[in-house]
Image 1 (cartoon, rainbow, N blue to C red):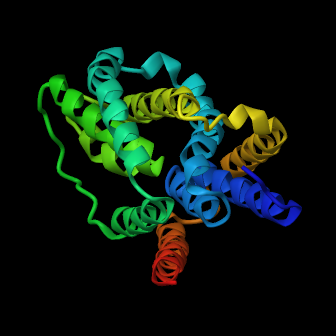
Image 2 (image 1 turned 90 degrees about the horizontal axis):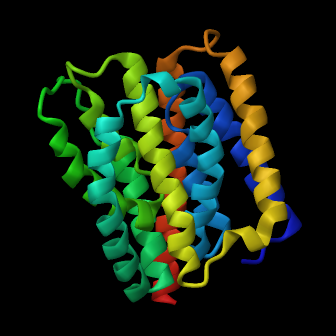
Image 3 (image 1 turned 135 degrees about the vertical axis):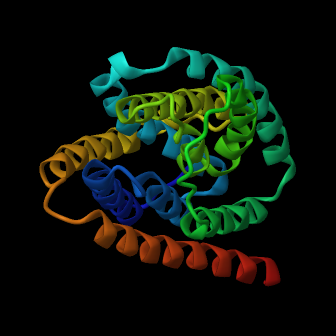
Length: 247
């Protein structure tokens, strides 16, 4: 992975802004950051780099709400997650870099505009085995599993604090596992520790700043802004990769 100084500065600013958004609204930041990383980093490093930075971001929320984690859900989720990631990595290696980035662009568009379910469920926790399986594949290909798994946490038997804590724990586990999985195919992000250090520092600063501003901007306003940003980033990725394939 090679980054120019300008690209690093762009990523650092994006990490700061995205963590600020997540800290203030609790949504959208991780997907926006994924899109920005996909614009400047080769496909093989997009997901592991995003995962390493998101470990810090989501890990902060896990520590704050640790007593509320529903570990039974985590257990079921892990049963499906690991084989899902193995299958995802196998498929990832078969596809061309341009195709992978093109799929990332479409993925961002889908999670941005797909209607969010609000109906509460009361299915057995065993549902999180297939949820983990699909999340494993998505995690390898696209990095951001939050938009996919969120709907399954809207349940009668999961209160707000448990939702925040357990969902964040699922995401942290997925992000942590992605790093060695990509290491097996030669994508070791820790070799680029100065980049990681800079981005993680930006994430921490952004999260703290976002928490202080949490009550000063409406969620509705931020949701609209985030949708516009995500759409523009996704279209940039899709058009760029289509032109690359045509050329």
